Length: 255
Length: 160
Image (tube, rainbow over all chains, first blue to last red; front, side, top):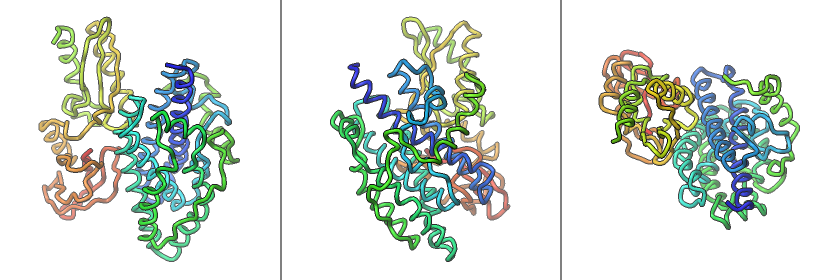
């Protein structure tokens, strides 16, 4: 494979894998803390899915870049600026409403993302992976959307909390749909869809769900960004120290 | 089929799933193919879920069973076509019900779980008066239901 093609595949896989790993880690923080037993089963199940997606994507990245021998090196042994995830996924969980709203935003985006990869992708292994990933992210989106409606259309207090969550997450949504030189290159090479191209499908679905929950659709303009370049927010350092602790303290440890 | 791959199938067909120990991997349709290339045996498995934590255990089990007959396999995961609950054998579905898990229905749409699913039978008392409690049960492949007649909660295997 040509060097610049390999670089493109590696970076593209890393962006998606990091999004999934970091949101998976955040979601796993709910284990043992969810408001009901059912949600205490649901959220870690979803976290497991997200981390599973990350694991498989890191494996594909390792096949491309021989500097990394296995997925653990990518997940646990990079430095902060080497992670390329969105700022949206690294923010603290906040309350349950904030958590499910972010999950709804992200999984709905990924659903349409994988749907496009399924149709067109020059990297065969990712195209195959997208068939399964599409099904699972659709399910996450459905799960989260039910909570957004239930809480939005619930009591005054739950509606207020969801409105606050919308305000809270709003500054991070622009980055989700931001095209840059890299995403443009990926599209020109039929590797990955441009984030911006997903916006209309995403907006239609999200707006309809928010409306059902008596909630206002947020204003989406590019406010905070940096994750794709490895420039992260304060919350990320604390997250990494948790995430990386075992591999840093006991290098190469395994189950 | 080559003799050694036939032997490998023989060894693997009785291996059980770590999370559903009453079902074999063959019942579940997880083992897709055993092939021999120049040097190695390649076993292709289709994970029920991408992040299924049982996968690494399954891989270890396959490798250690085949080692006993002198084969050290390469194990590959396949996501295309994605694993489907339609691949579970009729016998597998019967065993599931006996174990108290309501088996998956035939797949009708391109989604996980059927949004219009109404006829979920209670595996305890066979009543159809049941309701969904949660999208997720004890594992990602199941959702949680309860029976409105006998009041027992039970897992329903999602159609995937």
